[in-house]
Image (cartoon, rainbow, N blue to C red; front, side, top):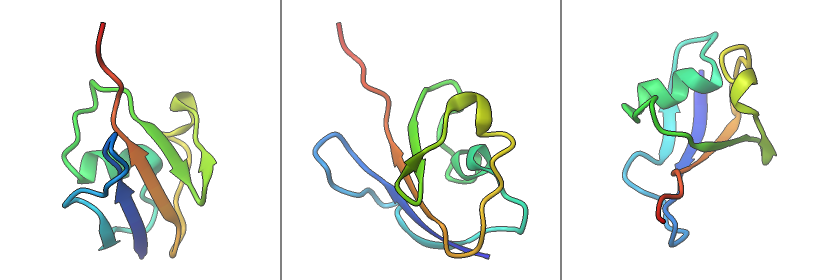
Length: 78
């Protein structure tokens, strides 16, 4: 299935991981993070079709063909 993936930087720009990607049927929200080789130790804000997916729900949130997945990097600082 195909997903429209956007990995957004803090400046609002998409990075090189963004674009339409082919993923296996049954891919979960966390599966997209893994497929993009993003660190699973980081906490990303993740939205599917402009709706947030909570961290506890990401392993069970199965994506569908044509979904728009937007991933925001963690905010760090002190």
